[in-house]
Image (cartoon, rainbow, N blue to C red; front, side):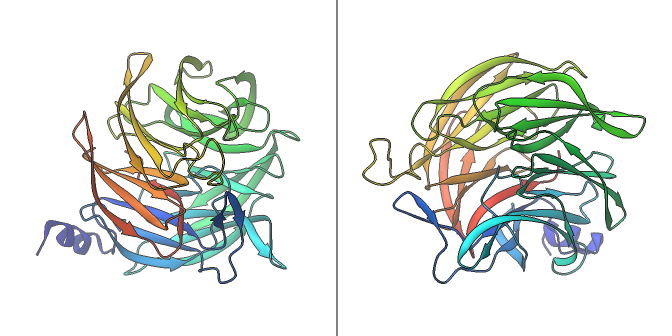
Length: 372
């Protein structure tokens, strides 16, 4: 009996000891640089990936979407469930804003959708507080942040915060032990800072300006810093990632570096030392475009004090989305939406080495691991 199987049996769950979840969108396809609804879309789904393989060990049908930051899935601190949002659905052959939040029970032999709730139009990035009592969903189309209370396996609406027209709130991030939240806004190039005041989530007057169109954001390890990807170039102009020093109610941007075209997804290593990012690098553009490249790029940056330093990079599949690290920091997964696969890399602290990719049932659009 393997150690992974033994731990699964002891826990009474099908979850591997070290796992990632991939939300897969089958209703969008890239053709000549345009996102279209295919004539025979595959079902949206959520896949459980055993990182010791890595390999898919279970899947369940659930609405998902590639629209929005590739963090539209979040895992509860106790591993008992996950939340998956859907920013778009197909209506009369066209994509329209969606507002669904699915609760997926992870306790049994296979994942099961146990509840479906509604957030706001364009429900995208989702985050769960460290204590497992609160979930936040950024509604890009509506310009709001939905709050949900969590009690065991029950999710219930607990309010909505208006962020503002045109702000396009994208991804919430808890920090400071859950007492504060950063919320990226790719519509007006700001990051909101929110605080829990008397048990209520309240926006503060302070906002951050890390770059054009802040989008994906993450923290890990000692949680002294966060890293945000800025996708403002629109596939034409060079884009950046920025380093944020987390200091309670007064976080501040301390570094910014150019990375290439469209840093779509990013994730810190479990120890908080590195950050991996998927850079589209024109791989999602039309082949005739001067910015087109046949491959995307996976980059690894080191967080050295209050500075970002490029460690290494390697080619990856096209239209890159989410990123995940194994618990030991030696394996990185990078979603290649266009080829319906997840590229796998070995990382030794200095270099990246390709390993066999994972074929996915639909385009991998978002990914999450447990908070380390």
